[in-house]
Length: 128
Picture (cartoon, rainbow, N blue to C red):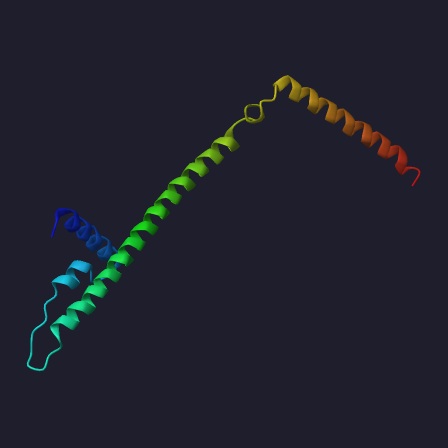
């Protein structure tokens, strides 16, 4: 068995242990059965176990891929949360590039308009 395959199977074994899975591809491959007089055909058993090993490797690849994607999404979520926090904490003038003097003028005009509307509303109420 080459070094790359051994490392891959070791990673698989560690992940499966974390997930509570007892068997991994290497354990299945290395399993030996006792031969009895009326036992199973060894070749048929080996062929079946090879199929099981391929499925385990596919499961491992899928789980590893999903875990990688989950970690990427967690990092992205953390970045988005920190960006949102920065935007919420930033002053309005920095967020929108508004000049503070212009903002004060707009607020003054709005307050004036509100006062005028209140005055008009009071005059019209007497007619109602």
